[in-house]
Length: 411
Image 1 (cartoon, helix red, strand yellow):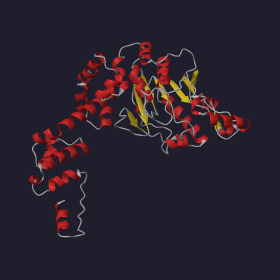
Image 2 (cartoon, rainbow, N blue to C red):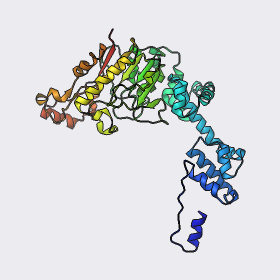
Image 3 (cartoon, one colour):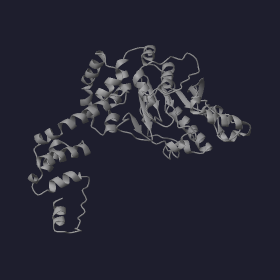
Image 4 (cartoon, rainbow, N blue to C red):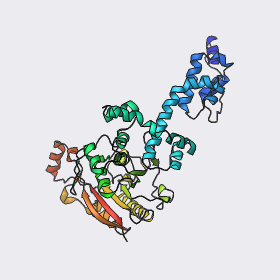
């Protein structure tokens, strides 16, 4: 800055540039260090430098920052005290959430890039972390109000409020009507559960799968977690959950670990299923064939050809069978696919479709035995009146079918 000002004062329109390789060092701190005497930075500039450096890299200690800006550790600590507190609260909430879902400490540490000692230290504060939200709830504040006040997600607060309660009570307090039959209709997704995501599924539907096919504290595995609907629902219903997804959102979804199911691999021996503990229930809601393919990353299986899509699922079902226990159940969620958009029903070809029967043709020989078929239709409201009228004129038969296939391992 000084050199630039000097050249400007004498009317220079160009100045020589020196390029420095900082090898990971914060450019802001390098500039502060290279200033001719730290006193040339005003108090305001020094404080701003310290705060910006910490925001850029929260792993920097007050001593490290202070050494570079020419201030004592205590002075620097005062500069960044509020930022450090916010960072600790954020870390506490991530650890609380992941611990609540039954993720082992070593995986929490690896995911958050912290040491085991740091994770253990934060876990020791978990009881204190819940005191203020609990107090506000007891005083009459609503869950959305407390969530905003303390920076909690609503499913995390539901996990707190519903702790120890029976599943039926949890459903009642969540406002979900419990379906007794094998048709589960939902016009909308519950906005409290999961992020805005392509192909988002209703938390109510995941809740019903958990209600009928798992028990409290069971371990649920979600191999393609997407927007986190399963994870949020597991929090509210008291289930543990380990999950993976190819898209990584470490700040919003630290509980979903990044993993790409490479279709060329077919063995996937490096996943979290390689450990000793195996899931009680797998909830597998993959990107549906062709649907919303443009909304997903280009590596998504939604963009595969029909043959490639079914081949991937075949290898995947075999992998799940080999890497789980005899009592593990599988809930496979998918929908019929036909290229009906511009094709009259009478002219459709089976080779251009993937139907429920096609899925079962690969499930059964891969070692899974069907126990239940549950209908969970998509809402027909996605078709407006003009679209429906045009479909009727062309004798196009649309699709709202969606199924949950419940399977157990063959003996």
